Length: 121
View 1: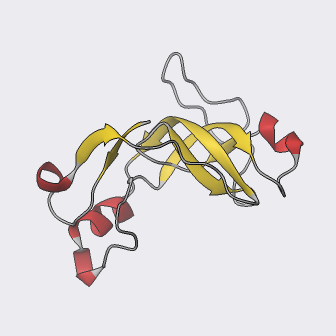
View 2: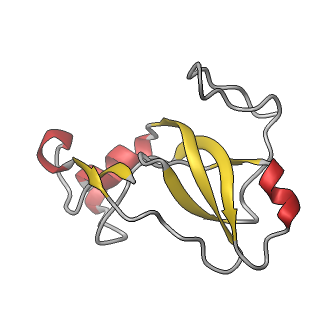
């Protein structure tokens, strides 16, 4: 998948890279989400810059805390009925992993073709 990511903290123009990463595969009890809308959360900037001494929680970070998409893969422990739902999560990549329980179904769907986000129902 093509995604934006960083391996060290600093200013965006100095540390953000865009490149190919392996598609994440969901683990037990997780879903994979094809992201169709994503936004920047202030916590993304704080983590990337190390604001307040915040360390990187992982060696590589695909940023964005806010977003929405369509569940496109399920693993054991997640009911098949979840496939019809949409998942609130986010990443600056086309696919992310998420535990099945924090995702939530959205009303009205999420734009994709027109890029217009729809609100949670």
